[in-house]
Amino acid sequence: MRMATLFSVFIFSLVIVSGAEQPHNMKLFLLIGQSNMAGRGKVEACDQVTSPLIWSLDKQNTWVPAKDPLHFDKPKVAGVGLASEFARCVAKQTPSEAIGLIPCAFGGTSLDQWQPGSALYTNAVARTRIAMKDGRLAGILWHQGEADSSSAKIATYAARFTAMIEQLRKDLEAPDVPVIMGELGYFNEGYKRFNANLPAVVHVVKNSQMVSAEGLDHGGDKVHFSAAALREYGRRYFERWQMFKP
Image (cartoon, rainbow, N blue to C red; front, side):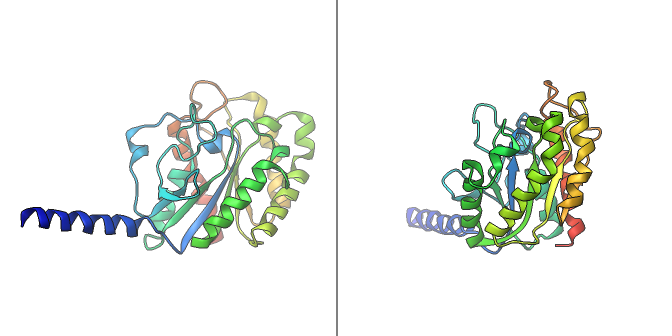
């Protein structure tokens, strides 16, 4: 009798878990850009805590409880990114609605590698369309620019980024979805000109906001933000996103 009871409890638990693994009607966020969006911060215990409200689309296009590293672009170096803390902030704001993160960033990539027709762009659109079967796209989180920080590339960045976002919104049938983009690290003098140009980019991309990276530290290489900095960056991204009153 005791064995039968234990078996029943086990089956009941499986049903609960199975139900929890089928999130619907989620707020979805597409994560694109290069390594600082993918995340290179050192993973700590707090980054492994999952929430029943926060999900991530894994490499097999299956929803799994979100925890860092979210990305799988370069498994040997993937780590903490800004999106997990961003999602935790969203969850606090709307605790009755599940959140779905769509990791598509890839380290070392330039803006040209994200143009329509490219492998990265095509993958992002395909994965987002799969995710949208279970929710609505509530935001595009973009962090990129280290690979486009030369004077020549900065000069054309606004036009190239605008064209990419316009096509992306069209392909996802989300013409007004907010786009949040962040500055590069202040710790690297080579990024100063890129950051100075970002307001011009935001000016020409409708429904977009820029996030300051002022005061955020690097993890030792003067390229990638530290885990603590990325958690703070996630909070800053959230503050900008909620300005759209979604």
